[in-house]
Picture 1 (spheres, rainbow, N blue to C red):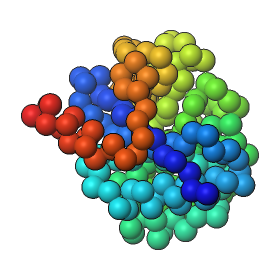
Picture 2: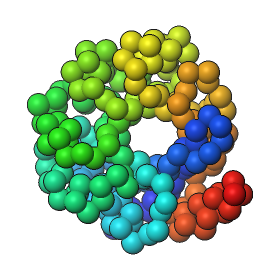
Picture 3: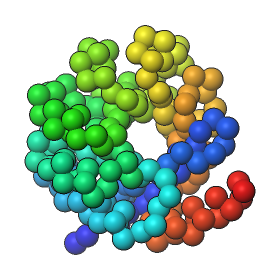
Picture 4: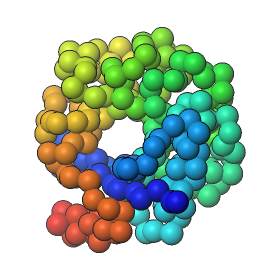
Length: 192
């Protein structure tokens, strides 16, 4: 059974579209199904005309099983790999191939798991996605000031003074992937 994908838009503070995140519902995501879901998501990206980067989650423990040089060759800057925070610290050594592939990667759900500032220092994440439910705004400010890292603030908010981008159910409710291209076309048309 193939997973059914949904997407949610990610916005810059000025309201312009930054990207979309693909995710699954009603499908058990575990380290055993993670790579399958990741490759299915890549297939979805490959057959669609998506004018913005697509964010796809991946457990850090799965990173060593992906041929990042091949993925980079095919997708380049069309994808952003969001590494699920709860296991990043356990797999720092496996990260080299991703880090050196040129693919953009992000730390997902900072403040919701076990990663800490040492992970940010060691891996130099180019983007950190912060769950505002678990992370006070002052911590987001500190992340930006200490590490100079762009922050995508997620969940139940429509604004945050320190956010470089916002992803929230209040800004865009997830939709089935079949609506993606039409939804993005309308979004681009609306801003023109």
